[in-house]
Length: 270
Image 1: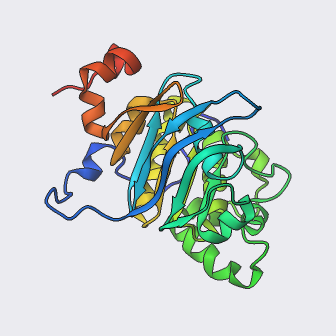
Image 2 (image 1 turned 180 degrees about the vertical axis):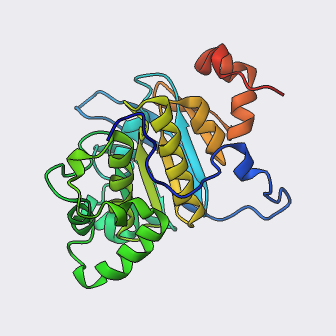
């Protein structure tokens, strides 16, 4: 399928419109996942994260933006047990999960979609989804119905090899596989990377649908403007620390954030 063709996703309302009806006076949801002064790195004595503190509240879509090398992907990899943590804490629903193995974190309710190599190209769409729940095969039929209700593409293309799909469709398959376990929080690492603008729009719609289905999302994203458009809240990382935080709309309009991190092309009218 051509990269210029949009995946067959159900109608979404990504962007500021999906937040327009939110009740500003509603009580703030409880924290489901957070870090406290996280210090982490890939090799000894080289810290990529240097005291990073972020939080995700129940039902939120939280974006992570910032310059290249700021530690954005390292943050979610450290939280998911893929990068050694030297100090600080990662907390999930009040339980310290710092340094816990990835398979235990999945069982605890975390899902992770990496930026690259996130599908098995030689397997069909359905076989990819089965891999997401291979330890709980008896639950597969029910979970497949729920996930394919969210993304009919997965049922429509269930017999097609994942490697023959477009880039945007492969991202939907990767996210669908992560959703098979029924995570409380889903980590997304640069879901729009390498896609055409049209396909990026479709992937952001897919992310919004996940969040609207009740899954909290922590998303690292290179497309800062669209990330902020769909985020309830966001953080700007710089040199391994959270430099700015606020709602997506606040950061998109903040003069300092625009000047230092977004550039004039990210300026929002109003």
